[in-house]
Image (cartoon, rainbow, N blue to C red; front, top):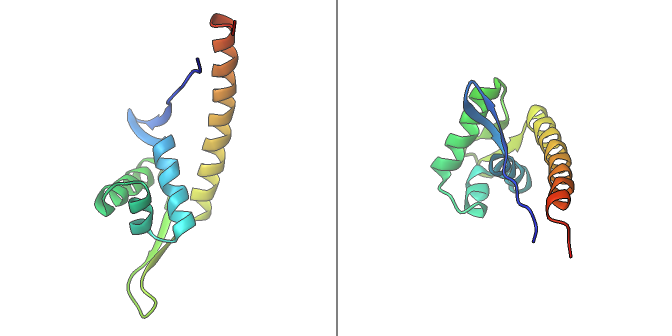
Length: 111
């Protein structure tokens, strides 16, 4: 058996960051595109854009810079604030998962 935990960060009772939202931001950073990130996450462009916009509003910072059209097409890049939030959330998540695993072993020792 293995424990699984899902957690998120709320601001004013609304989700500001979650594992899924951080993965979406990471996908934007890796693909350079909200559309490609949405495809990777198996959601519509509109849903991906809405979730990014929600995060930005709730955190009070710009997370994604976008460029539209042009000869090379549009694109999206993460802001330094987004990179910082991703790093901090992932560090937080890693430590929580370690704590959950240790607590699990106390109550469900492997036999």
